[in-house]
Length: 172
Length: 174
Image 1 (cartoon, each protein chain N blue to C red):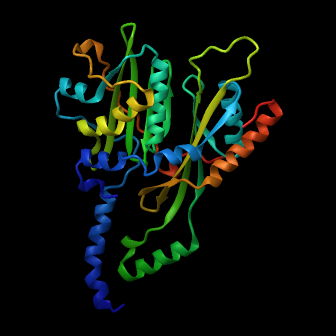
Image 2 (spheres, chains in turn green, orange; image 1 turned 180 degrees about the vertical axis):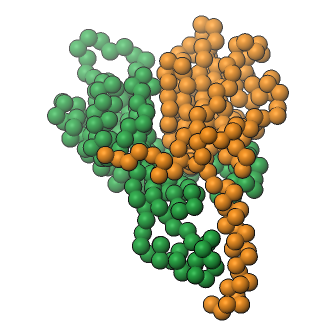
Image 3 (cartoon, each protein chain N blue to C red; image 1 turned 180 degrees about the horizontal axis):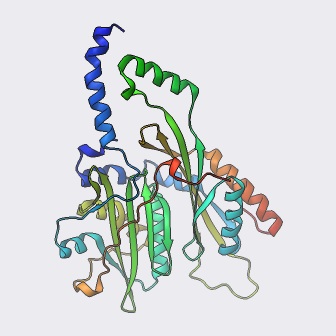
């Protein structure tokens, strides 16, 4: 938070460290799907929009899909606490969350894509990874970040994608 | 709490708030504070060569590496071979994959972090080596070799584009 107080390189080293258990997080966020990568990304786009996200980036050529969803983050209890702080210490101390943005990143890569498929072969396997994060803004314009690693988020996304793909004849 | 204690705590609390305010991030049009290292030094720090002509494979591996490290992918251009990602709403990085001859691909990474006067270019060799190129090398299962010695064979650093970081700057979801 105290970005004014540290060297930029130290700050980058601190923020840039990979999360603990990065490999486990990758596995938890990844599913193997059968089908064409572009079709899977198109279906994932539909799911993303169904979940209320606005698509901010889409590139089938690189296997990337990204989007954001904004929500009000104001909670009555937090505002009440801020008012108490303001009474005790002055208005400059009143801080509360005002809004939040959830950011979604979907990436895909064809597994074994170096091997050309013979005519009539079964569709190739595509790995799809879905990551979520949350940025929370407060009444003073400060932003804090939270990683969202709850498996329910991935489960909801892939369940909806599975339903969508089932109709298309593909499978998770 | 007594008025006396409240008065005693008020100055430190106000100082902390002022300090935090100075650290606020989220402005989209902040100036970029370039590294003071020479162009040759910076090229060596920020670039590696990989023994593959497959630019798209290297780009996808860069994307996977960034996502593994907790970055959110914000922009990607397979035609230009570039990906931009942001971590924790503060650390922004653009990685560019360029073909070198018929058998190699050069990757250049460039990262920025917010400081009070703008966004400062990260120029720590350990940052690029330990937190990007070595993991990228493992993802690709290829050795990360030194940057090309000839300047014209190494890409120029791409400044990661700024973005709106606060929720209120984003369009509302439908």
